[in-house]
Length: 271
View (cartoon, rainbow, N blue to C red):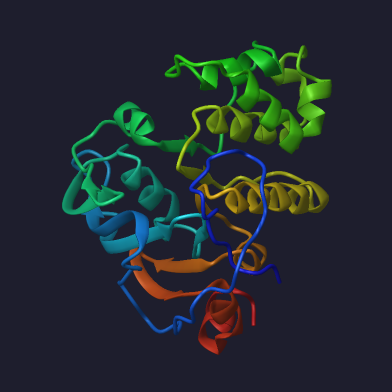
């Protein structure tokens, strides 16, 4: 299993880098808590869509600086809803979202992007009629500086995108489109990158490659918060895992601890 991540000591936000150290042990007992060092936290969130029933019930998820946090659980557990709540895509009836200690609960998604958050949805996450390079340029729409260095870093991270930079994104494979979507999000130079089911519909080989690239991004100091159906694989690269059941926290711990916990294995990982 990969070692847990730590951010770069110089606080840099380049897309390439290296270096991680072991995370402190956190027992995988039923928990609603989150690390005091969280760069992003959705704290005790309760809410749903519109005037419908609540989907989240005092749900707490968070990610520390330069680490990977994954949200797993059965179908209908509220995983993607929790992610969208953190990004401001639904109104909370209770709870709060804080980024670097600042309460951003009332901010719209685009305002959260300006604060340093980036969100990659599961579907419809590229402009299919635009080329790969044009998609990346769209990701930098808020920036007023020279974006060429960041674009080269994206191409270094995903070499196939350099080869296909003049090709419409709609002509790419599913795995390549996911790389475009992640690359476009990285063009905003985020401090927190949020991924909703990044390996959905891709082959096992492509899934492994995407997970490798996610690890590389986290090694640069960018925090990763990810929803993933492939729970075992996601927990194997996670510093922290949140297991949700019916919109509430069931277990919280390091990825390694959750993989080893017999209750988690029996209920959510197939034994």
